[in-house]
Image (cartoon, rainbow, N blue to C red):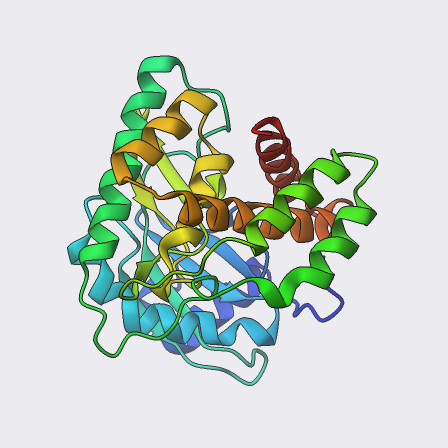
Length: 291
């Protein structure tokens, strides 16, 4: 997936546990679906080990160690709880985490029926509203909670690279419209920053958990509208917008984040990470269909 990946496997996890947390060293370790820069391994029945497989993601671990305990109690659904923080070791250069296991499955975009989609939409509204109420004192800026204008060249290059898969002219038009939207002038608020289907957990068509807060921080809430195009159908998307009272400029900026995130990800991962490529393609087609 990346040219600078570290060798991370279940054997490494067992050795790190034996060295740093021997009480857990005899528990079974099994790989889970990986993210873009962090690997996940289930540890026994109730824990997960999270390790970067590129050194540049070490900051994700330190961020989550600091902020998961702050965000968790303020949210209406569960996020991972830090049980232990592992230190870099002789054979592995990054910090790593032991987290509690969260039940649920990731939602398939567009798979929920109308009633379920409405419930999931309302759960997302509750999540985003709760995020915006959290105290922002000492909080860092989010990965996507600023402006996206610096991504203009990357978006154009990426859309050119995937023009065989998407409506390139339509997406470029929507991207230009997003660039022209008025900036956020309200107080900075907490954002998750990466509300894609792979970072959400559902049970019985209700949102029960949120994963991967490494992109979280404070700023413009438009970036969290990624969820509108990553998992919701058009009617549910309209419900989300109405219930959150999203103004036109914020909606346009949110759509811009969807175009930027998905186009860059699809161009980069189309041949190496099918899950991310599929999610990104779905988002771009949903955005293009809103023309």
